[in-house]
Amino acid sequence: MPRSHTCDARGAASAETIRVTAPEGGRLDKVLTAVVPALSRTRLQALIAGGHVRVGTVVVTAVSHKILAGVDLAVDLPALEPAAPEPQAMALDVLYEDGHLLVLNKPPGLVVHPGAGNRTGTLVSALLHHCGASLSGIGGVTRPGIVHRLDKDTSGLMVVAKTDLAHQALTAQLVARTLWREYIALALGPPPFPRGVVDASIARDPRHRLKMAVRAGGRAARTHWKVLYVQSPLALVVFRLETGRTHQIRVHAAHAGFPLIGDPLYGPPATRLAARLEKADMGLEPFLTFPRQALHARALAFAHPATGQRLSFSAPPPADLQRLVTRVSPGACALSGL
Image 1: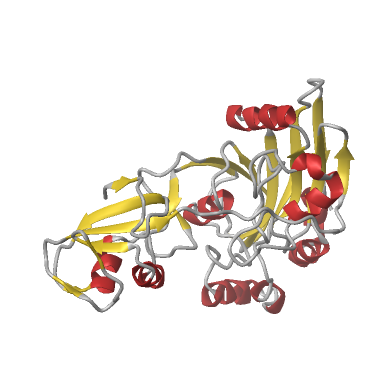
Image 2: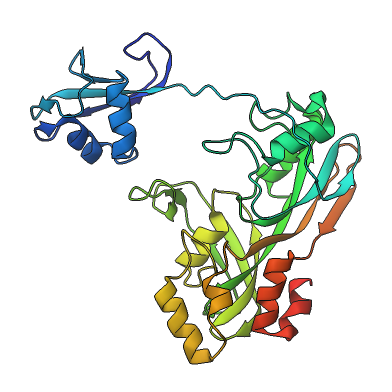
């Protein structure tokens, strides 16, 4: 699918232009949906109505416009204009802080940086208030100081840079895979082996715009895993990342056959989970209603960007995940870091 950078129909700079040829005739929005699977039909309809779609050289704004097979189509994707986040006073669980960086324990439910539907109340806003204006130029407008991120409903440890030099050094460690991250999760399994590695590339799922998927040609992704405790059909699993792709642990765990409890995108279907738990007589309600992926970043280690000293941090899972692990077995609590 050819792409290029250009200007949209109104002369504004566009991030890129998607150029395709209609394989068949029909309604413009339906044809585009078939040949541009990366964009939803709703998104394409909005682009058509906004004057960002050309049939041949003519801008067409009617989604029901009939086109002929073989006609050239161009979709101009407008360049995004990120708004600078505003500082907001919020409580932060800071484990370590100096003039170069800070390490914090992120609670579940907190979005890391602004995005669609989450312009305020993010970790970035809290960091701007906590660290002051000096943070605003580090790492980009909407991601100041952020070296690596956690999904909204994943809890645990993050390191944040407070200077450009610290950001560059920590990012370099992330690329070199010397910034060490370990996660713990409750999964439906049990896994087939005591430990293993998932080495499978990840890309956007063409059938679901909110999901990622294991796909040939995607970005390289590698996840190490080890079983800590099994109370069949559930397992407490530790994950260590070599790469940091979007939803990597969640995608790889599901791909390997032990999806995470509570995961709304990649977790086991409720009927399957219920059937497995009923056989084990473990109780259904706490596991079926757990409101997020049962995943926590419990350990973090890296070289201090200024001194070179190796720093290591750990944090136990939050109360909701603690309660869930306890229901599996009190014997799993010590292993989970509780």
